[in-house]
Amino acid sequence: DHRLLGIIYPVGPIDKLVPTHRELAQRIAAVWSQPPNRRVRPVVQLCGEEIAVKRDVTSAACGIVGLELNVLPVYSIPTNPNEVENLARLLEREALLGNSALLLDCDELDSADKVRENGAARLIEDIQGVLIVTSRKRRRLTHRRPVLTLEVHKPAAAEQREFWRDYLGPVGKYVNGYVETLVSQFNLNAPTIQAASAEVLGRLSWGDTKPSPDDIGAM
Image (cartoon, rainbow, N blue to C red; front, side, top):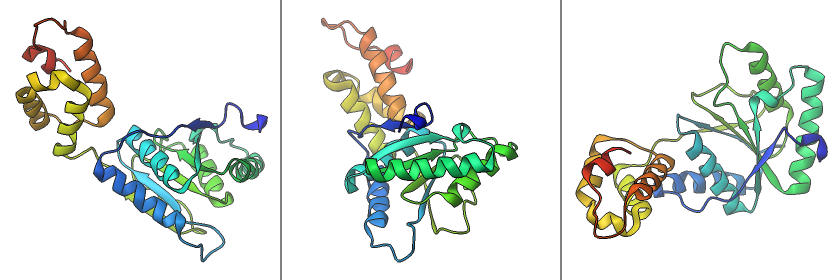
Protein backbone atom coordinates (compact mmCIF):
# COMPACT_ATOMS: atom_id res chain seq x y z
CA ASP A 1 0.00 0.00 0.00
CA HIS A 2 1.55 3.31 -1.10
CA ARG A 3 0.12 4.97 2.01
CA LEU A 4 2.60 3.00 4.10
CA LEU A 5 5.66 4.12 2.13
CA GLY A 6 8.14 5.74 4.50
CA ILE A 7 6.23 4.38 7.51
CA ILE A 8 7.17 0.71 7.47
CA TYR A 9 10.06 -1.08 5.81
CA PRO A 10 10.75 -4.76 5.10
CA VAL A 11 13.44 -6.88 6.71
CA GLY A 12 14.96 -9.74 4.74
CA PRO A 13 15.75 -13.25 5.98
CA ILE A 14 18.62 -13.82 8.37
CA ASP A 15 21.43 -16.16 7.33
CA LYS A 16 22.81 -17.24 10.67
CA LEU A 17 21.88 -17.25 14.35
CA VAL A 18 23.76 -18.69 17.29
CA PRO A 19 22.00 -21.64 18.98
CA THR A 20 20.66 -19.61 21.92
CA HIS A 21 19.08 -17.06 19.59
CA ARG A 22 17.83 -19.79 17.25
CA GLU A 23 16.06 -21.34 20.24
CA LEU A 24 14.29 -18.04 20.89
CA ALA A 25 13.18 -17.86 17.26
CA GLN A 26 11.88 -21.42 17.42
CA ARG A 27 9.99 -20.67 20.63
CA ILE A 28 8.31 -17.66 19.03
CA ALA A 29 7.47 -19.64 15.91
CA ALA A 30 5.94 -22.40 18.04
CA VAL A 31 3.64 -19.87 19.70
CA TRP A 32 2.55 -18.50 16.34
CA SER A 33 1.97 -22.02 15.00
CA GLN A 34 -0.51 -22.95 17.72
CA PRO A 35 -4.19 -22.77 16.75
CA PRO A 36 -5.42 -19.52 18.30
CA ASN A 37 -7.93 -20.06 21.08
CA ARG A 38 -8.66 -16.37 21.19
CA ARG A 39 -9.55 -13.75 18.62
CA VAL A 40 -5.92 -12.67 18.26
CA ARG A 41 -2.52 -14.22 18.86
CA PRO A 42 -0.23 -13.13 21.68
CA VAL A 43 1.96 -10.07 21.33
CA VAL A 44 5.64 -11.06 21.48
CA GLN A 45 7.81 -8.62 23.43
CA LEU A 46 11.60 -8.85 23.01
CA CYS A 47 13.61 -6.97 25.61
CA GLY A 48 17.29 -6.13 25.98
CA GLU A 49 20.06 -3.97 24.59
CA GLU A 50 20.77 -6.18 21.56
CA ILE A 51 18.75 -4.24 19.00
CA ALA A 52 20.11 -5.96 15.89
CA VAL A 53 19.88 -9.40 17.47
CA LYS A 54 16.23 -8.88 18.42
CA ARG A 55 15.45 -8.07 14.82
CA ASP A 56 17.38 -11.11 13.60
CA VAL A 57 15.54 -13.38 16.03
CA THR A 58 12.21 -12.00 14.80
CA SER A 59 13.23 -12.44 11.16
CA ALA A 60 14.26 -16.03 11.82
CA ALA A 61 10.96 -16.77 13.58
CA CYS A 62 9.07 -15.35 10.60
CA GLY A 63 11.12 -17.50 8.26
CA ILE A 64 10.22 -20.63 10.19
CA VAL A 65 6.48 -20.04 9.80
CA GLY A 66 6.66 -18.55 6.31
CA LEU A 67 5.92 -14.92 7.11
CA GLU A 68 7.48 -11.76 5.73
CA LEU A 69 8.55 -9.10 8.24
CA ASN A 70 7.86 -5.37 8.25
CA VAL A 71 9.23 -2.91 10.80
CA LEU A 72 7.36 0.12 12.13
CA PRO A 73 9.55 2.61 14.07
CA VAL A 74 7.58 3.96 17.00
CA TYR A 75 8.19 7.55 15.90
CA SER A 76 6.27 6.83 12.69
CA ILE A 77 3.06 6.39 14.69
CA PRO A 78 0.83 9.48 14.45
CA THR A 79 -0.17 11.28 17.62
CA ASN A 80 -3.82 11.76 16.66
CA PRO A 81 -5.94 8.83 17.98
CA ASN A 82 -8.08 8.69 14.84
CA GLU A 83 -4.98 8.52 12.68
CA VAL A 84 -3.61 5.71 14.87
CA GLU A 85 -6.78 3.72 14.28
CA ASN A 86 -6.55 4.31 10.53
CA LEU A 87 -2.91 3.23 10.56
CA ALA A 88 -3.84 0.04 12.41
CA ARG A 89 -6.35 -0.84 9.68
CA LEU A 90 -3.78 -0.18 6.94
CA LEU A 91 -1.22 -2.35 8.73
CA GLU A 92 -3.73 -5.16 9.16
CA ARG A 93 -4.54 -5.04 5.47
CA GLU A 94 -0.84 -5.08 4.57
CA ALA A 95 -0.24 -8.06 6.87
CA LEU A 96 -3.13 -9.97 5.32
CA LEU A 97 -2.24 -9.26 1.69
CA GLY A 98 1.50 -9.61 2.19
CA ASN A 99 1.40 -12.56 4.62
CA SER A 100 3.58 -10.60 7.00
CA ALA A 101 4.25 -9.91 10.65
CA LEU A 102 4.81 -6.45 12.10
CA LEU A 103 7.68 -5.48 14.38
CA LEU A 104 6.99 -2.32 16.38
CA ASP A 105 10.42 -0.87 17.20
CA CYS A 106 10.27 0.88 20.59
CA ASP A 107 13.98 0.51 21.34
CA GLU A 108 14.64 4.26 21.18
CA LEU A 109 11.36 5.35 22.78
CA ASP A 110 11.89 7.73 25.68
CA SER A 111 9.61 6.72 28.55
CA ALA A 112 9.17 10.42 29.32
CA ASP A 113 7.59 10.98 25.91
CA LYS A 114 4.02 10.33 26.95
CA VAL A 115 2.58 11.35 23.59
CA ARG A 116 4.55 8.62 21.80
CA GLU A 117 3.95 6.19 24.65
CA ASN A 118 0.21 6.67 24.30
CA GLY A 119 0.36 6.35 20.51
CA ALA A 120 2.24 3.07 20.77
CA ALA A 121 -0.17 1.77 23.40
CA ARG A 122 -3.18 2.64 21.24
CA LEU A 123 -1.70 0.91 18.21
CA ILE A 124 -0.90 -2.25 20.17
CA GLU A 125 -4.46 -2.31 21.49
CA ASP A 126 -6.04 -1.66 18.09
CA ILE A 127 -4.03 -3.83 15.72
CA GLN A 128 -4.76 -7.47 15.05
CA GLY A 129 -2.44 -10.06 13.55
CA VAL A 130 1.13 -11.12 14.30
CA LEU A 131 2.82 -8.37 16.32
CA ILE A 132 6.27 -8.16 17.88
CA VAL A 133 7.36 -5.26 20.09
CA THR A 134 11.03 -4.62 20.78
CA SER A 135 12.21 -2.44 23.66
CA ARG A 136 15.25 -2.11 25.85
CA LYS A 137 13.24 -2.70 29.01
CA ARG A 138 10.12 -4.72 29.73
CA ARG A 139 6.97 -2.72 29.04
CA ARG A 140 3.37 -3.13 30.05
CA LEU A 141 1.83 -3.48 26.62
CA THR A 142 -1.85 -4.37 26.50
CA HIS A 143 -4.84 -5.56 28.47
CA ARG A 144 -6.62 -7.06 25.47
CA ARG A 145 -4.04 -9.55 24.27
CA PRO A 146 -1.79 -12.08 25.99
CA VAL A 147 1.90 -11.14 25.92
CA LEU A 148 4.95 -13.37 25.62
CA THR A 149 8.01 -11.51 26.93
CA LEU A 150 11.51 -12.80 26.18
CA GLU A 151 14.91 -11.39 27.11
CA VAL A 152 17.52 -11.31 24.34
CA HIS A 153 21.17 -11.39 25.40
CA LYS A 154 24.54 -11.41 23.69
CA PRO A 155 25.83 -14.76 22.46
CA ALA A 156 27.46 -17.04 25.01
CA ALA A 157 31.28 -17.15 25.10
CA ALA A 158 31.48 -20.35 23.05
CA GLU A 159 29.14 -18.85 20.45
CA GLN A 160 31.23 -15.66 20.26
CA ARG A 161 34.31 -17.81 19.71
CA GLU A 162 32.65 -19.54 16.78
CA PHE A 163 31.69 -16.19 15.27
CA TRP A 164 35.29 -14.97 15.46
CA ARG A 165 36.51 -18.11 13.71
CA ASP A 166 33.83 -17.95 11.04
CA TYR A 167 34.34 -14.29 10.23
CA LEU A 168 38.14 -14.38 10.33
CA GLY A 169 38.18 -17.41 8.05
CA PRO A 170 41.66 -18.77 7.20
CA VAL A 171 43.30 -16.03 9.28
CA GLY A 172 41.67 -17.51 12.37
CA LYS A 173 44.27 -20.27 12.66
CA TYR A 174 46.95 -17.63 13.23
CA VAL A 175 45.09 -15.80 15.96
CA ASN A 176 43.39 -18.48 17.99
CA GLY A 177 45.17 -17.33 21.18
CA TYR A 178 44.14 -13.76 20.59
CA VAL A 179 40.56 -14.78 19.95
CA GLU A 180 40.51 -16.59 23.28
CA THR A 181 41.81 -13.45 24.95
CA LEU A 182 39.19 -11.28 23.29
CA VAL A 183 36.37 -13.62 24.23
CA SER A 184 37.53 -13.66 27.84
CA GLN A 185 37.88 -9.86 28.02
CA PHE A 186 34.97 -8.63 25.91
CA ASN A 187 31.31 -9.58 25.62
CA LEU A 188 30.44 -8.75 22.00
CA ASN A 189 27.44 -9.42 19.84
CA ALA A 190 27.56 -10.97 16.36
CA PRO A 191 27.31 -7.71 14.33
CA THR A 192 30.18 -6.19 16.33
CA ILE A 193 32.34 -9.27 15.86
CA GLN A 194 31.59 -9.30 12.14
CA ALA A 195 32.43 -5.61 11.73
CA ALA A 196 35.62 -5.92 13.75
CA SER A 197 36.73 -9.00 11.84
CA ALA A 198 36.15 -7.25 8.52
CA GLU A 199 38.20 -4.29 9.69
CA VAL A 200 41.07 -6.52 10.78
CA LEU A 201 41.04 -8.49 7.53
CA GLY A 202 40.97 -5.28 5.54
CA ARG A 203 44.09 -4.03 7.30
CA LEU A 204 46.13 -7.17 6.89
CA SER A 205 48.48 -7.95 4.03
CA TRP A 206 48.08 -11.46 2.74
CA GLY A 207 51.71 -12.46 1.98
CA ASP A 208 53.58 -14.17 4.76
CA THR A 209 52.44 -11.56 7.21
CA LYS A 210 50.56 -12.87 10.20
CA PRO A 211 48.12 -10.72 12.16
CA SER A 212 49.73 -8.99 15.09
CA PRO A 213 48.17 -8.63 18.54
CA ASP A 214 47.55 -4.97 17.73
CA ASP A 215 45.47 -5.91 14.67
CA ILE A 216 43.21 -8.12 16.78
CA GLY A 217 43.21 -5.93 19.86
CA ALA A 218 42.18 -2.83 17.87
CA MET A 219 38.76 -4.27 17.05
